[in-house]
Image (tube, rainbow, N blue to C red):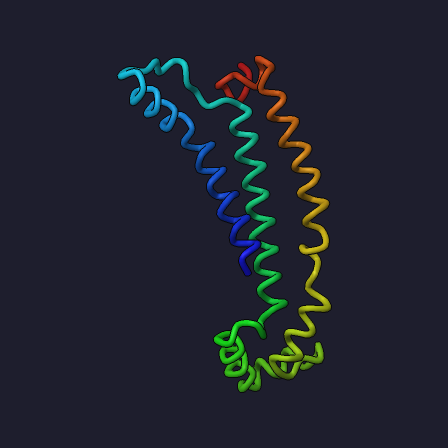
Length: 153
């Protein structure tokens, strides 16, 4: 339960640092020199691409966290009580009975065996996005990626 929230924190922090790059750099330069050149700083195409990549990272990490949370319901006593309460209702029992789920233990066992789609796909997915992230960082040396226009006019 600590691994995924740590990744979520890192991804959110990275997105916020990229988004607020200009105000932070201008504040730092103003703090160091007492003045700053506003023309020196601009949001580039690479920044937009990196924010998009990290937003996808954040989405995949959040989906992995939710999936992990479902697979380990029995580890959180408050959730066990909540799901035991929910399984008292016939409509919920009837819906989950078709999947062989009758109580909290069978629900956890079902999710542990069946709900691994994001967990299995996330490393491969993130590896491809790491390659794209590194390529976009390396591409910042090109004038095209340093441009502050999203679309070339």
